[in-house]
Length: 435
Length: 109
Ligand code: HEM
Ligand code: FES
Image (cartoon, rainbow over all chains, first blue to last red; front, top):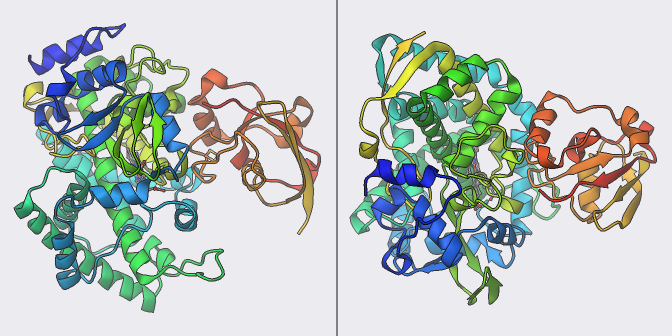
């Protein structure tokens, strides 16, 4: 079946009759990863908490069950799920390489469970409030304008490589205070880190990725040492010198600082770049939407809703892992203690019991903010206000400068990164005209 | 530090009165610290998740004031449960004029 056919069938409403044979399918299959919606649909209808033998994971597909998981971060542990997913199959060798060449193995301090997680999380929350992020809006607009001006006259560019990736890198580096960064390195680092939860790397790739992560850590460690000696007005200094309310552990340890700096640099980067790629994909394949966006470009509510619907319909994060800490029933399945799970946020956003005609881009949805593109519960994305702002400003500034955006390759040829964690367009060749 | 008294009415009808809420704190923080059901505050007060949504008692609406544009945008995301007196608890900072404040907790999203 062609990609276009599947898209047309999924777009129908009400959505019915799109079964795939679950027993013969795994999410690991690159064709499923690229076009997953029928697979999600079938799970939601036939086996909502589905054991995927290819991944050895329980896939959580319904909105309601996702809410149950998100509401109970103790039964469904991020820390254990993440540790199980991380560098799966090669973790010992991976650790050795990092300890030998990368300054150490630094487990993610934010990928943990309460109460420890609560302490770390409080330190990060203040940095990303909607009101603080709002102040960055003019700066972000300038970044977008600068990038667009580079290619506006040429009539063609790659939406991911020439726009989405450099834009997010520039913004997160400015926030962290990394002013001497090399964008190409940061992109390589991002891909290497995210590959550790993607479940698609072989041993050779793991070794190469580990080497790249050593580079990243050595860079960050030098920056952190510098801020220890000479604090500046940037987020890295804030982390280094942060004080918690916990009197026994008032500061972050060096290990924690490295892991958090790495998380901010990478988590904020890959996901937001993916969101921007998806935005451009939608503008390029639905010209009527691009025109409507332009007509409403100064309407705050319209643009805000537009961004939410992009995030709902094409969520950057497909699925993130959890592990059960006890036997528990979920969506009709009984999961044993230690069951490894994947929260399929992308399927939650597609759940027709919550979002009527889910494949429809519909700005009138009354519950438009209910999507789970940012997860939920104690681990709800801490950078969501920044992410939304970046996508919003990009949407606005892009259509103000560029019109007649179209794909320069057939839809079928769009490639996605090989990973279960996100659904990220690798390259997005576009043609357009300057406005 | 000064304190005020605030009352939140949960979805199940239970009224939680908090007699010693510190001024300067947000209604969301105070509600969470007192385990008020339905106030989750998932984004930590970033005005970005609407899991601290309350309906302000009409008598208190004027004192509390209206949401700003950013808050309106977040509330717009849950317009299926939006009312004229909707506010986000994390954006209501307690101050002396709000002594006696009464709100109802909005239903879950
Ligand atoms: C459109 C862009 C983004 C998307 C779709 C996204 C999505 C997500 C999701 C789904 C989670 C939940 C994790 C889980 O359930 O295990 C998450 C957590 C997180 N995100 Fe984002 N994110 C984005 C942008 C950002 C940005 C810009 C930053 C920071 C600068 C960031 C930092 C984080 C951190 C630190 C966590 C962990 C929070 C915790 O576990 O308490 N994200 N994100
Ligand atoms: S706590 Fe998230 S909006 Fe109030």
